[in-house]
Image 1 (cartoon, rainbow, N blue to C red):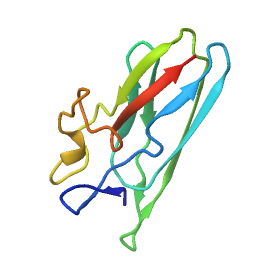
Image 2 (cartoon, one colour):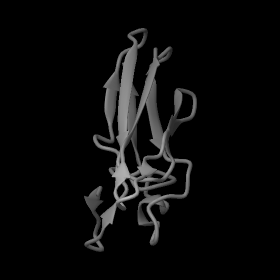
Image 3 (spheres, rainbow, N blue to C red):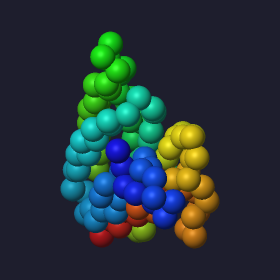
Image 4 (tube, rainbow, N blue to C red):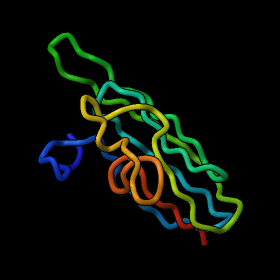
Length: 115
């Protein structure tokens, strides 16, 4: 269901939204998507995870999809990630431009610090 925003509605969320990684140390992200929309964790210059959508079940529920992505950070820095797909309908609040750029930090955007 995601986190509740200032409008008191649930919004698409990737939690946690910020991470600390180490240069040269492999990391594996496992993302469980509980809705039927495509998402991404796109951090230009670092990674681009395409998150599979869940599937609609005959009973009206959604079967979650699991996406696993392994990579090794090659350079230190602060990298902002965000979702490149228009999601969080019908209001798309989590996709609106935040203080740091596209999408709302803590919902469909965040930071990755590579040491």
